[in-house]
Image (cartoon, rainbow, N blue to C red; front, side, top):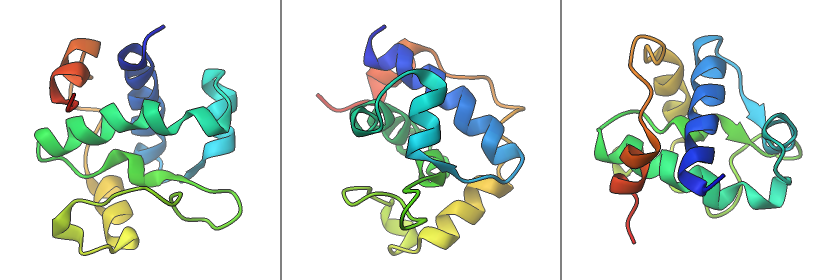
Length: 114
């Protein structure tokens, strides 16, 4: 499975969690998709860039560290959130992800900078 196919897997998982207003630890996400926690960053990147390209709330903001309860160091927020993770997470929870068709692996690849 390539990273864009994994991004689709992550999209579905995160969209469902957002619908129920749940934060997911990196550890749990890794267990659910069969990837070690330390390997999730590159797989979450295409989801982040797709959200930015489509002007959507940053879906990846609800993936958090089990220890800190916040996204890991290196996580970026779009400029319009002024580094306010709580506001970003609230916007993710307020958005109707389920009514939106899931992107394809090709959509993730097209949005991801080389």
